[in-house]
Image (cartoon, rainbow, N blue to C red; front, side, top):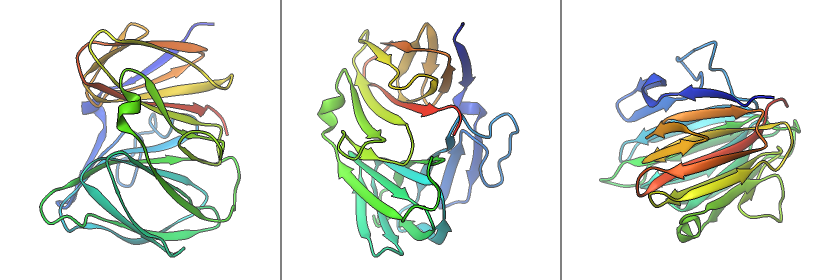
Length: 240
């Protein structure tokens, strides 16, 4: 059974420019629709967002979706109908299980600096759960030349947890560093998103902001092709 690859080049993503918000969409979202890019398994949204200073998303609803935010630089203030008011920054991971329904807003409180973050939606394996919010602060040094787990299905595991058999990792590698990742669950797939640098994945080269979907693999090999190569690795079910 041969491994299947789907390469999404950075420049092929959908793009929206609202002035205060600039967003690159790996998968169909809002006004960007590509029938060949609806989702990768249960990974439904991967948005690469820029929010201008003192701007943000007004209060809006979600339901039956696991929503993960990963700040890349700057700050992002979160408020929701569950009573949470928090601020996240690089090194933090935010998760919200929308479940039966929740309203929230995200706002850049900084006067000068933009907020850059990844907005990720995962289709849950349980519907109509009680809405939930959580955030954690990770030690960024723990991803130096290794994969740091930032999300899993298990409440007592490393990182945040969601209602889905998914595992997310972040890694920051020196040039020529090699890493092997073995899938946690048979029949899952992997979606890699290269934040910075250059990376070879089973011999396939990725450049900054490229994405690569992988199916029918039990493990993959990563090789950093330059210093400060940063990757987000998402293992997700291919069917819900």
